[in-house]
Amino acid sequence: MVTAIGPGPGEPDPDRQHSWRRALDREEGHRYLTTLEGWREFAVREADPPELLPDHILGDLEPDERLDYDDGRIDYHTRLTVVETSVLRTVVHTGRRLTLLNRHAVSARRGLILSGPAGTGKTTALTQFGKTIEAIDRRRHPGIDGRIPVVYVTVPPAATSRMLAVEFARFLGLPVTTRANITDVIEAVCGVLIDARVSVVCVDELHNLSLATRNGAEVSDTLKYFSERIPATFVYAGIDLEDNGLFNGIRGRQIAGRFGVIETTAFPRTEEWTGLVTILEQALRLHHHRPGTLKRLAHYLHDRTGGMIGSLSHLVRGAAIDAILNRTEKITKQSLQNVKLDRAAQTRKARPAS
Image (tube, rainbow, N blue to C red; front, side, top):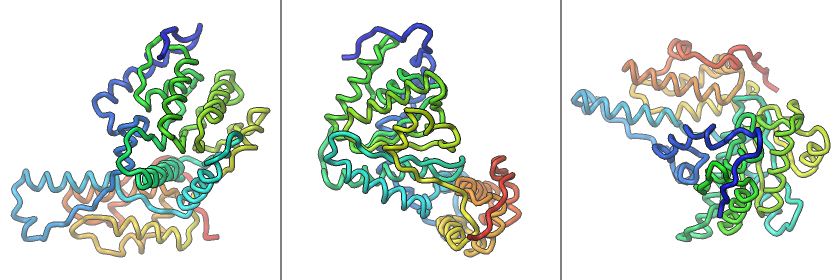
């Protein structure tokens, strides 16, 4: 039972701070990975490509029918297929190995950290690993309710230990009053996750934690306490974590001694990059797009994106949506140039082939 005691003196009220998030969750909770309902929907959802109608049927559609048809394809392109990169394969393989090694560990369970610049696929790799573990658990325990094999939370900006504990409780749907005591929140979270046989805890946006501050140190201690109480493999992801001091000081050395690190970087201009472009192109559902167009533009796409997989995905998906909206139904170099990219991709110097 969560006791209504309240935040400590001078501590931000996370309930008030995140009240707008909870309101949105109630309306569209299925869209958020940081809720159990949203995560479960993501774990079983597959973006099945819509069938393209023959031209003679397409031309006979009523205006409303055409809008519905186009809206379905637009929705599909907004969540275009996840490209299986070498980094993603490494994360999934390494993470699965850790879950097996940690299965009977009583203490000092090992974890994994994904670190690198923004847009290099950290969150995608983290969530796809969690999705893999979820699928394995469903296959091994069919029809068994009450299991929560994977938890996905993010570290809030300027987080306190209480705010982090509330994020775990919010994922699980546990009621937390404004004056709830952090100890009781943590006990409730640990109790539910132990009973639910959790095996992987994914913590994203770890760069919001700074060990140089008192709050950051307390958040780190709370994560460590969770990892000691909950028999699961913890996987963290964040932007340039080593540069941000994650491994500094006593707490940093403890993290470094228990977590392996996988660095995510921009892709060099190699055959793998061309393969990623080809996979994205094959997933398109446009009526007049010429197959091989994007493959021939692989070098241009690398120059535009600096080899950032996130920027590549944004660029191709944006051009595909434009092609449907303006009824050209194809992607060209000119249409790609009309899609604005993030500043990091525009200024990053492209890496040559290694």
